[in-house]
Image (cartoon, rainbow, N blue to C red; front, side):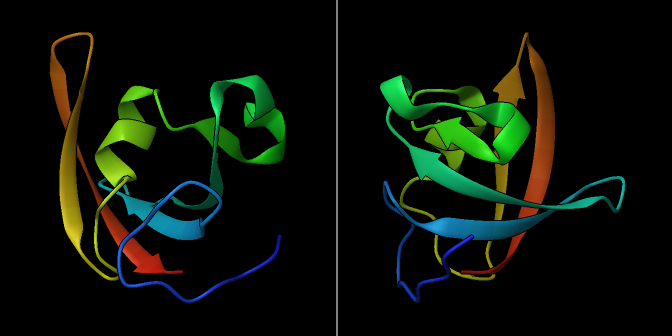
Length: 77
């Protein structure tokens, strides 16, 4: 995936995140019409996408899915 440097995450950015269980994944934030989770493209309107939009590089953020809170750490952009 194409890597770009950014101050705040926005649509089109690719970010590497660490989930609370230690798993590290890379996602590209895209619009709903471009969503393709199997290829690492998540919608800006998904719970994770909404949480990541506007976050700063190397920041920790929380998001909620089905009433359960999760935390991820943005490692790189």
